Length: 293
Image (cartoon, rainbow, N blue to C red; front, side, top):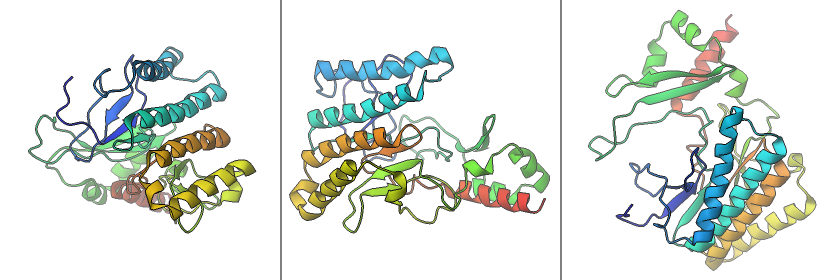
């Protein structure tokens, strides 16, 4: 592989296979490419080996129906990913932003095709995926067809009810007292550096009740100090030290919160952390349909 341009944003994201789990997430909306081959990013051989070994741990569970042997084993994998993200960020330097867990394939979301005329990118469908106890149900929009929102609005009620009969509404809709399942570690000049990125329809805000998380007191102090340094030091905001310390804090936060909460750092897109308009419309119609039954 020969890179036409060195990436400016790279995501550490595991994938099944004996490969380097690094993918290009540079600013072009048409870039969706990876994984990178070994040797093209200038990373040390030792780090690349550790990245491949980490990725292989996910591949190893394919033989067990993709089930981790225990919650502790899964948590160690998640925490080690954050620590590898810190190490990879240090080798890249501040010129490349290393993302970890910014993408989440288990989320219900619509995926959109690239702009027309984009070279080398095959035609894709827009897809709306809703969780059910038996997996996912899909509503597809081939290119050039009415939007998913228009399809949902025009769909006869009987057809909609048949499509959505197995959908678990509680997995798609926010409820009072809902504990976050996705948390973004992000500096916050006016408060605590954690934001709710749980992608449930109707989530009223991204504020988090920190006390409800039951974090260790020493971790709260570390998070507060990291946030203070960022707020009071312009140079620190742009530094490799800020990114490195952020990944390491995210690892400690992940360990404290356990496997049921995904910790994101850095730069999770808030638009992608909310249900798409199509999903919001789907949830609204499903709620109305069930309330009328």
